[in-house]
Each structure stands twice: as C-alpha cells, then as structure tokens.
Image (cartoon, rainbow, N blue to C red; front, side):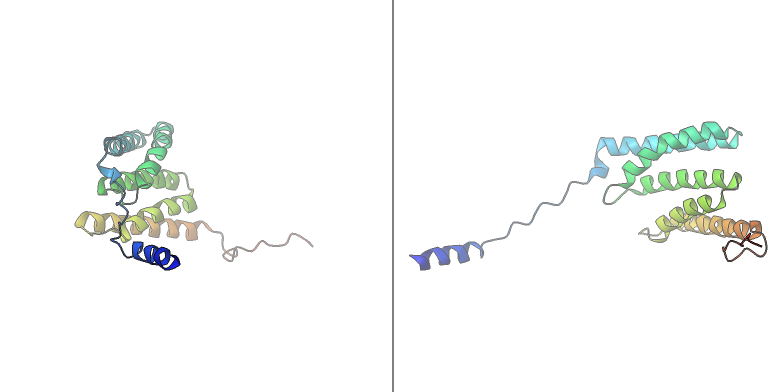
Length: 163
C-alpha cells in the first residue's frame, strides 16, 4: 500500500506542467493610455506657462503631473509615449530648477532623463537625440556647480572657525 501512495505522488510530479499565465499587458488598457495622454497634456501646459514667464503656474501643473508620471512608469514595460512624456516633464522641471540656481536638483532631473534614454531599447534617432540633450544639460549643470563654488572649498570640508 505504501508503494502505491509513493508511486502516485511521484507520478503526479511527472505530468505536464502548467506554466503561470503571463501578466496582462496593462499598457493596452484604456486607463493607461488616458494617463499617458493626460501626462503629456499637463507637461505641454506647464511648458507653455514656463515659456510665458509663469513659473508658479508651471510648478502647479508639474506637481499635478507627477503622480501620473509615477503611475505610467510603474508598469513592467512602459510605452515609448509614457517614457517621452515622463522625460519631458523631468526635463522641464530640471530647466526650472536650473533657472532658480538649484543646480544639484536640476542635475538629478537630467540624470533621470539620461538613464531613461541610455538604456531604452530599441534605440532610435529620437531616443538618441533625447540622450544627447540630457547629457548636454548634465554637462551644463556640472559647469555651473563648479563655477559657482568659491575657491578653496572644493573639497567640501568646512573650515574651522575656532581661533
């Protein structure tokens, strides 16, 4: 009897395996497409506000768009349109930070853009253009950071004020 039970257990492991079904592609769902469209629209509106000297209005629109950016990038394989919209938002925010002399924060935003396009597959002329733009903005930030640092404090160490 034990032999029959052991044989039954062993033979059930030899049956055809059922691989788990792949997760659904949420990028084809209506909510995802709408979120990407809304992100692009909010980013364009913020761009227009910033170009017209209305940085406060642009800032409000960027804050409104950030949750959408997180949502569309949280999926396993975001679409190219989602990556472009997110990159446009981060690029605009970086330029706004740069204009306010927040060089390190601007650098961070441009580095996010660079990382997106450096590893994007398949590479296209547009993704290469975006990567080159991000790298140029990173270089600009680095120049401004170095230029803005007073001489003698390049190590980042504080000078003692003790006598």
